[in-house]
Each structure stands twice: as C-alpha cells, then as structure tokens.
Image 1: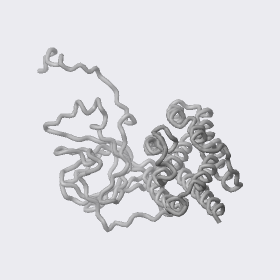
Image 2 (image 1 turned 90 degrees about the horizontal axis):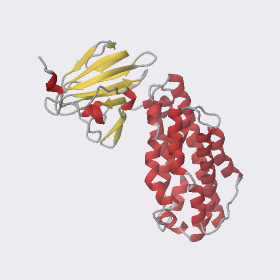
Image 3 (image 1 turned 120 degrees about the horizontal axis):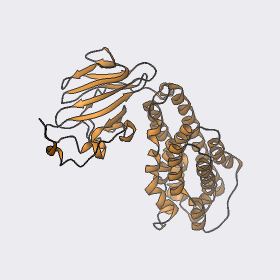
Image 4 (image 1 turned 60 degrees about the vertical axis):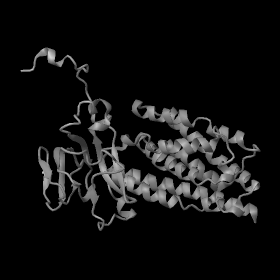
Length: 370
C-alpha cells in the first residue's frame, strides 16, 4: 500500500492539460516529399506532461485526428503501435480494412502495412500509443515511418473539394510552389536588370503593397472582437507595425508611384479583410500573405537587400516571416467541412491576387527600361 510520505517528493498539484495546449504536427517531409498526417499531438511535446512520461519502460502517447475523408496514407513502421478511438469513426486501410468506432482498439504490428481515412462529419479523434524506442513522429525530421511511394497524391482540383486541414495545407503547398515562379523574381535576379534605377523604381512600386499590407494588419487588429483571435492579431501587429514607414525612410526618394492594376490588387487585401470572419482572416493573412512573404524575401537579390543593415526592412522580414506563416494555425483545426471549402476558395483567390500584383510590378519595371 502506498504510504502518504512516499509521495512527498512530488511537487506538482493536479493540473489540467487541454488537448489544444499540446503543439500540433501536421506533416512530415521524407526524401523531399511531404506526407500529411491530419493532426498529431505528441504528449512529450507538452513540457509538463513530458515530465511524467518515463524514459525507462518508455511509452509514447499522441492525440491523432483525421477529418471526414482525410487520409493518412498507407505506411509501415519498425515498432508496434496501437490506436484507441476516442470519438467518431475511422476506416483502416492496407492489410486490414475495417471500420473503427468509439472505444475500439486497433493494433498494428511492426512492419505491417496500414493507413486510415476519417469517416462521418467530424472524422475521428484517437490516441496513438507506442511502447518502445520513441514515438513515430516524436522526431519530426526523422519519423519512424515509411510511406508507400507508388500512392498518387491528389491533384490540386481534387484538394480544393476536400474538407480537412490537410487539404488546405496541401493546396497551400502547391500554390506556394506556383508563386515561387513569379516572373518578378526572375526579372530582379537577372544581372542585367540590377541597376540603381531599377532598384529605386522597384521600391517605389513595392511601397504601394507595403502601405496596403500595413492598413490590412491594423484593420484586422482594430475590428477583432474575440479574445483568442485578438491575441494572434495583436502579436502580428506588434511585429509588423511601422514597417512601411521604415521602408520609406530607407529609400532615396519619397516618391510613390501609382498604377491602377497594382493599386487595385494591393488594396484588395485590406478591403477583403473587412468581409471575413476570424478563421478566414487567419487563412488569408498567415497561410497566404505571410507564406508569400517568406518566398518573396528569400528571392530578393543582393542589390535590393544586401546593402541593408540589420534593422532594415528586408533584414527584419527575412528573419520573422517564416514564423508568421505558422501563427494561429492551430485555430484552423477541427473545423466544419464547409469552412474548409470556404478557406480553400479564399486561398486560391488570395494567391491569384498576389501573383497578379507582383507580375504587374515586373511589367512596370520592364516598361521603364524599354
């Protein structure tokens, strides 16, 4: 029998850990290919929970989720694993195909081929357990899984019709890749175009977008009415505030150009933000605009950004934009199917407007050198 004095070394009092408090993992990259997991929340990624999970006789526990029709592709791993279904329904794929529902336990021996697809309106939530070595995705850069290579990924048009977080992340990955080929980047990275005149003209056009972006960030924060979303909006505003002014100060001239197409595409974003709900704002601001910013600043050649000091507009954004892309992403988890459909439409529109805006800058720069 456990004596009272045998537990005196425990300093912790009972505490609650919400599922939302555990960091999420949405995908892993294996051999330069992304595999989407739905939602995986490893207990060891929570600082307080991890202290109570022993390193000897080691066990790994993770919350796992697949939305309706969301697929974890068939794969194998070198250790035994177990899924306990806590809510909803899910179908197993691979060597055994069967329907699992609340309370069911599905055991997968080492090296057995298996996968899952979420069923019903909300898919399923479950617990994934491993009893040796480490959790399957505990090290997300070296996961203990091997996916089947000949399973074809859905095309973009199929993804748009999907209704899960994985579907909008897959779509965003494809749209990011498309944006990375925007002709502005090729133009600016062509050595023959790297003149002081082109630099000043580019910054004059880019100032239009910087001003519109600043307006959008401020509008989002001012008109947010829910605390959980206000926190995200405020963090973003605090880190972005005044960057259009710093850009203006770093330029040699205060001249700002004007073009109807460029201004219309840039001003679409602050106008659009006023018509969106808070979830859609996260998608537009972070999945689209901040994701594009990461690509944009990575593609800025030395003659635009290289001479800048550490506090410059370009240096700051090279450091912070990748983190901004992930800001608030957990608030897009476990939504209704229709909301994911709406987000996918918004993503497509937002990326199209960004592509057109930067293509227009390229066209204007080429016109000036003819």
